[in-house]
Length: 297
Image (cartoon, rainbow, N blue to C red; front, side, top):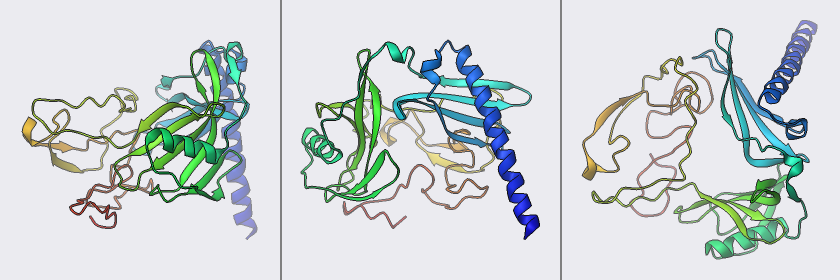
């Protein structure tokens, strides 16, 4: 028992030392990017892990203001001993203190949900709060959403000003739209919206323009092809449908950063959990009766 406790204390100590070292490295890199101390004094490391396949350590930084995240203000860093540190994304806001800050709250979380429903033409009934995930995020159950509605506090950069917003997500009952919206905490207007469901018209004469698709940038040219071994006989991008071309065999097409263990892994351990069209990003299944039968393959 004592040896086990000693082992745990050693692991905790080593992890703590790594976090302290990592923060020092991050601050040095942030200074090199030309950011002022006020721009990164409130940043957070919101994710950090090492890929067993590439040997890369991935570190994701979130820029905050007064403890709240600034929407999509992130830096992504990657490290390997033989390559050093690499930056693949920097959307931190420069000169935060020089911006006009709107940090008031006139709309409550429930009022923000109601405002979003009104502006998205979703029939509204009053939701019920089911839990509070943390100090800044609450979950609500509602008749008009398939999934619980998370509502969290954040800031959004708009016209050289930082505006406090309610960041919330609504999955419509017919599964036709999965909205992520930022509602102004003062005016109730939607400042930004994303639909996580993409709609295509399969017409050989008209191409779909998925302008809202966001993909992780390739980390670097030396990342090895992931060894998931999965292959797919599909109408590969940029083909939109059988009307646009023929099938092709795609071998291990997963992004090694976003899905290092392949598309069918859900527990971040080598070995797929599924052998059909279900995984860490998508669960694709036939819905011939338009009833959203998510339990079937």
